[in-house]
Image (cartoon, rainbow over all chains, first blue to last red; front, side, top):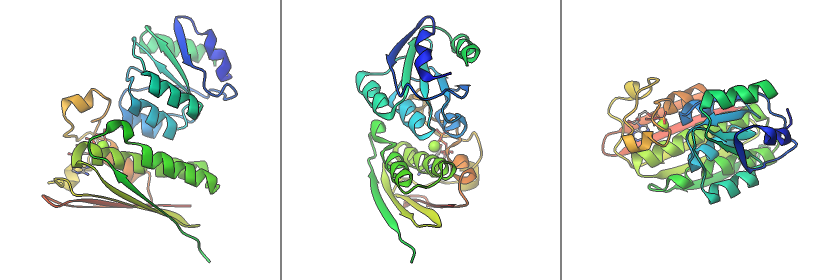
Length: 108
Length: 140
Ligand SMILES: Nc1ncnc2c1ncn2[C@@H]1O[C@H](COP(=O)(O)OP(=O)(O)OP(=O)(O)O)[C@@H](O)[C@H]1O
Ligand SMILES: [Mg+2]
């Protein structure tokens, strides 16, 4: 799935469009940063409840295409701006981790 | 003739939001040099975990990176409290990270194991009350 289609995910708010031409490879769920650092697939959609600056740092280094902040987690404005610079899309949702990950998986 | 790119960074001891600057700068340099993605990922993981450890556990430190056409050599040095039991610290899952740090997603106890796993050479030296030095190499 091209990143631009992720905008169609129900119950999700796109707060950063990222680089629309990227193709999402896989969904990955984890909240522990050093595990995500080692295991998040390149061009993956990473679902987490950790909405802080370090999440973006790890996503950038791991070449993640899209961060999905579940359970009402959110980034501050600065982090969203930085995500756009890095070409990473950011979605925010009230949905639980599994539910939103499954929706993305079904779209890929 | 082998050319070397030497990069130096100071990791601030108190600012989480800036942790990741060194690894991300090194990553960009390696990209510009045309190094392959697998090697870039290894170097990024190694430096990021080291940077974060210096912020959380050691009050900051310094990083020196030497990029040649064969390898990336990294030296991460701090003057923190040092590590009492190195083999324990190297175990997957061992962490002394405080609760407020765990709330940010750190403290899985996977940082040092990741650094060892994703590098071709890994050496950790630490003396209580003096500090910790990690030297690592990723070969191309
Ligand atoms: N530079 C350092 N100075 C002092 N102690 C350190 C340093 N680096 C690591 N340690 C000690 O080793 C332990 C294990 O480190 P490791 O990076 O594997 O896990 P962590 O930092 O606790 O959690 P994670 O890296 O998964 O977020 C730390 O909890 C800490 O006690
Ligand atoms: Mg660590």
